[in-house]
Image (tube, rainbow, N blue to C red; front, side):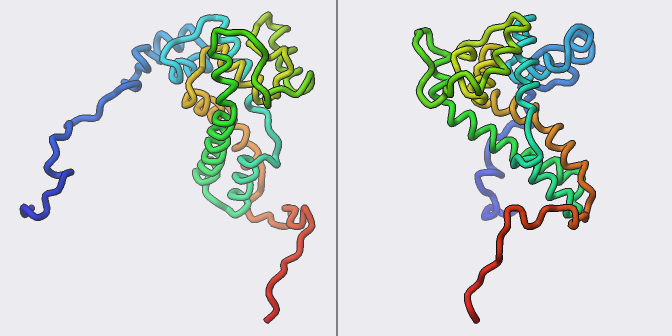
Length: 225
């Protein structure tokens, strides 16, 4: 290589090995997955470990598990399963179907977390007072989550105060110990991905006659020639 071909990448004093900050098989954050974690914890606890850096206590584990169940609820018409189903309909490969669902889910999760920034700040604060405006809707939205928490003897701040469903879901994750934006995005994406993929893989490739092409009704309109 001539001197003119040497740039900052070639000339830089770069490390010669990749640092393992979290993953050092079979360890995650220093915990042995194959021996210690597998023997005494559920898989959702291992996910919690990956996201937070620590294994959960019993209460945190139950809150996290419950939140993941409620996070997974979606319809076939939601963006991620619909996008993945269209990919499957067009005979995309299995990897492309899953990847399309994952990308949409991650974008949705990021949007949800960003939109709930004031709520997360309130949940992390030491003061009292009601939840910030815009995150409550009376008794309806979070009722099913509040009931599930009550049946299990669990609590999450704000859930019984009329939060919206999304706000209650984030409040439950927050109560479990998942509190960073990146952690919340990761959990919401992970919890929903198998269910979006399941809807997509139920679609038969190239079965266009089974797809509702005109729902809602529309008409193509163009400029006169």
